[in-house]
Length: 216
Image 1 (spheres, rainbow, N blue to C red):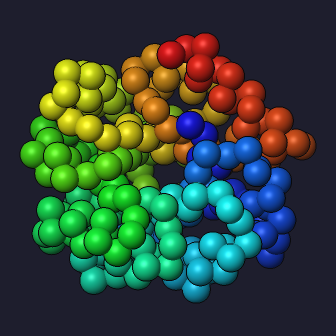
Image 2 (image 1 turned 45 degrees about the vertical axis):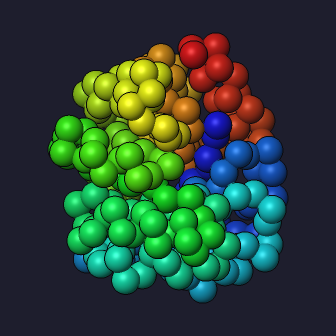
């Protein structure tokens, strides 16, 4: 699965930018609040508008403080998957249940420095694990291959039936890095610059999909 990140898109033309990647599995939406991460992006009003402008399932990644309070609004707005950070959620188990009750899938993200062991029990309540392969907060960063050990462990837990979820990765995913992430066991690849900086985003997306499929 490929999830182009609109963080790298032209914010003045978001409907057109979504249409340019109509073959995407998910459309990744980075929500940042300038508190949990040192950057400010878009929020719920833009997500509501995007939902009306595209049929691609929205994958909302909330890099925000107090997701227990704010995340449900994104589910109610029609997001397909709403991901919160383990480092920010006060009651991640309840939050997962509330997200599902509001109509979305529930995702849990961990920063590069957060161990998988610390969230394994919580992940039993989630549909998606988003492993950050850069520090959250900015696009265009370099891929951190050391996080792939967490991906391999998660893949084993899924394959042996201990967890049932989609393993997603976000940060520095491009033609040079996607194969190693796929080999480690990633299911869904978030890619911003590698898709939207290309002359033909749709072609770039399918190229990434092919590289991942070959590696898996």
